[in-house]
Image 1 (cartoon, rainbow over the protein chains, first blue to last red):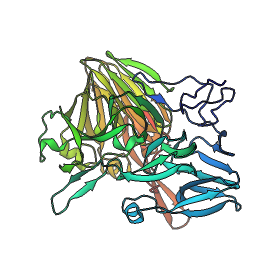
Image 2 (cartoon, one colour):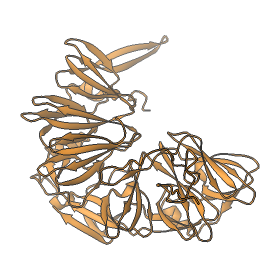
Image 3 (cartoon, rainbow over the protein chains, first blue to last red):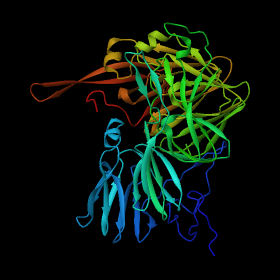
Image 4 (cartoon, helix red, strand yellow):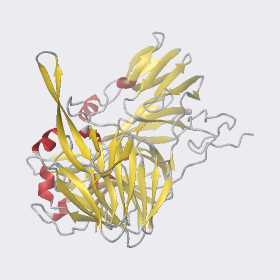
Length: 293
Length: 223
């Protein structure tokens, strides 16, 4: 009986391989854990193979990796059209129907998702230096993914998207500006009937952490890559103690906008994130915790 | 620097994680502190207090520099990263040292290091040098300290002898000892009968160390 469990995807796996056939993580390495408990997600090795259903996927390259699929008959993947790198003429491509087209367009989400049906070959890549993350999902498992991090998923994973409810408003009543530090919407993937494979692309290096029940952490909103849906998220505002400057602006305007994560569950962050937005006064915001130092 | 490399400064420790876009994770001891530009904070323990440091702001703001530098004090953990592939450069500073750093390259410095900034002199330096209008200056007085920078791509260092010169693409300049002088030199280039272009390079004159980065914005072509 196989008792080996991959330390990254947490699935029973095959220790006789060089890399986990489910998530591509190297088998022959020791876990790299920082002193505070972050686990470095090891990059998937060049040419590592992942198996799903009767199909398989090979990760090519390490700086801007591409995911190359060999799709079997009656198996399919879906993806945002802009990550398509190349495809066999034999691979059948078709539109995937999405709800809420207007909202997606207004929120800057991809409007066109494609399905690729086997048999055939197809390759996908994001155009940023970073890592491909493979998340094999078990029956009933659900995952929240930050917008624009999704690369592809197998057909048996259900795709939905929902409001993140992390926002704040700046500006006067005439010129109000809404800010969504984590993006307005997040992608939600569910392995409803059968296990499946979800591939993400993260920029820079990726670190994962398993939060205990009630454990909290404050992070830059745009650095979050994915989280178990059991991890709760809300806005967190920190106001550093003023050390004497008081020119032209209210002292309270200077703040760090972060999100507070509360366990239990796994979270992943990437080391590249967007710079926080300006220093305008916050007029209103979603539920938030505050800390004034 | 190898993944998960750990080193000490004062009573605190720093661990560098990742190799593509590395993260600097600091375990601050009580009484220790670090300061940083606020936009590079990746995550922190809730208990780590933050405060702001005055930097004579408006002049810096006009020059595109952040006018607020944030201070984090121990005890607790805090982590930083910048938004591009590159390397973290760790510069332990002994008492009495002065280092000039390209704007926006500074990641963090320990509380014992004094922070100021200098305006780059000369119109040619400002307009054509590609270094912006200011350089950050870090000075240690009585106590040693730790300075950490981020360089795009790979970072290389060279130590110049007194009077020795090196010409550097201005976008590649990262840091220098304050004993190294920097001037912009115009190099006229002829391209055919009527074509005439100028190439601006930063001339560094020793003695002292010069750090350069291998990935940079090319100011001549805008690429």
